[in-house]
Length: 219
Ligand code: AMP
Image (tube, rainbow, N blue to C red; front, top):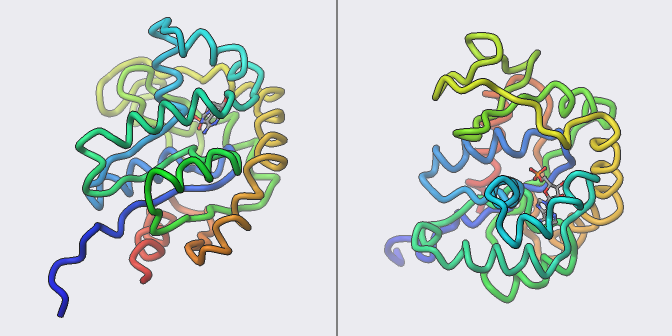
């Protein structure tokens, strides 16, 4: 026996198109394995609503469903990964999204698992358009598959739920195109490193979580 496993094997990337359920599952994974969750979309949205310099630069890209420039996002993630709560492992939700981001990440840290969440393309639009989010605690719901207990109200903190502006149909379509051209190639990038785990992302949310938990336990 070589003693306790160190460094931790819970440095995980969730890959998948908009609407695959990355946000919901990243939160569950992070809670289950008690590791940090890093959602670049959430960090960017906080910067936009806080009116920071980064938020001002990112806003127009996000509204159009385009990716925010690599250099901005890479600096943001570098700073976040240096925080102490990431030492025990992390779930990256929405990063990397380009090969340049993946290359930059490789210089900062090793990745243990890249979970590729896949599902039928025709499901994606439905999922994003039905999504509702809590602007306060960032909990994610879906009007059909994961409704809040009280219509339009967050279960956790009681705040009125909203629809993300980039969940409008035309913007979701632009985000899916960005994914296909710029993010999908990452599956091949990571396949070469032998860390890709395929997880089918349709069905009941608990079952999908179970598939993910199993996938990241793989050696
Ligand atoms: P998400 O919440 O992950 O769907 O991200 C929402 C939006 O934030 C995306 O459509 C992009 O405009 C921007 N964004 C989030 N993560 C990244 C990233 N890694 N690279 C570039 N843009 C990003």
